[in-house]
Amino acid sequence: MKPILSLTNVEIQQGSDFCLSIDTLELFAQRSYALIGANGSGKSTLLRVLALLQQPQQGTVYFNSEATTTTEQRQQITLVEQSPYLLRGTVYDNVEFGLKLRGLDIKERRQRIHSALEMVGLIELIQRKSDNLSGGEIQRVALARALALQPRIILLDEPTANIDTNSVHAFETLLAALPERGVTVVFSTHDHSQPQRLGSEVIQMDNGNLFNRADVAPKSTSKNLKENKIWQCLMNVHEN
Amino acid sequence: MDYLFESIRAAIELISTFDGEIQKIVWTSLYTSFYAILLATTIAVPSGVALGLTQFRGRRVVITILNTLMALPTVVVGLVLFGIFSRQGPMGSFGLLFTPVAMITGQMVLATPIITNYVLSAVEGADNRIINTALTLGATPLQAHMQLIKEIRFGVMAAIIAGFGRVIGEVGVAMMLGGNIRNSTRTMTTAIALETSKGEFAFGLALGIVLLSVALFVNLFLNLLQQR
Image (cartoon, rainbow over all chains, first blue to last red; front, side, top):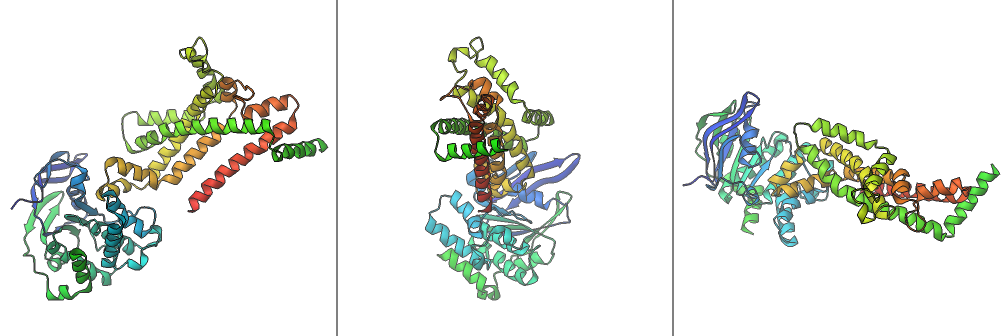
């Protein structure tokens, strides 16, 4: 099986320090990966490289075995930053932005926007101005904005860092369901038990290097998850 | 004091009766300023964005020069362009001196550094996540930069308004390159200078009121846009 995204001899240097130095990293489709490491270990930089937003000074990033970075390739990968930026306008405008860029008609756009906002539990804030949202709501809008695009790979930088404990479970349920729906998930976290809960393969980082990869067998989506309302919502969206 | 009140009354009468002469002068001012700002914006907005987003050797020098050009005396611009457009000058054969085109060119030169500087400040103050956000949502690099401009649109509008304020109220370029020719290149500012020196204080005052009103409406328009 060919990896959907791979890095070969990638190096990014800032001054005399290496922010990232990776010999090989292969990520396969429809799987979940968790990046674990201390602050400054290179997780966010690696996510930006994987999102094809930052070119490494050395080495190559392959998406579907191709080394070029085109807009078409980038449109299949979406990064949700740790502190996401919401564009001026309403929640609706934010989720619609990427859909408009893809030339989808208004009916399709509306359907995807409503589905994505229902998934993150923010449908009632659809017309709220983006500068009137709390940190947790911003995080959820950013996730909805990414999910609406139905990317092949979704990258999340500490996705549960800014959200309350009650919402974490819903968030994790949502993320755990994505690989089975054809989405590759890569997220960074400081919560060492989160990869286990999400059935993710752990990629451990230190000083820009991958120093250990502990494979955790992806657990099958539990009955518990399947019965969850969010899971059902997600199933409906993809089946529609 | 009576003289002043009488002049104000006469000025208001001239405005309210839509005096033909005043209409022509106001129109010349507005359309030359409009085209000058349109051209300056076309050059200055991309320049300001590029300068704000790129790092290169000599960038500080370029910014210092731009800051200096913001205070460029209008008569100096008029003088330099007079030399270029005059019959003996390199563009003398085009016969542009004392035409609206020469005025528009001079006013564009005045407004460009102002708009560039304001846009540069807006870009430097913009959130540095905007471009990456647009890119990761599927924008092309051009679309991502257009989104940046959209996000800082109030700063860009303030830049354009500041440029407009500079050109609509300037005298040096309009006088030296336009020549203050009646029904052709006479603007509000050159007419105010001329009419006042002729003793037509009420006429000058009427134009002064219109000039202030234009500035007021432009700023009200900007405020309305910002509230949306």
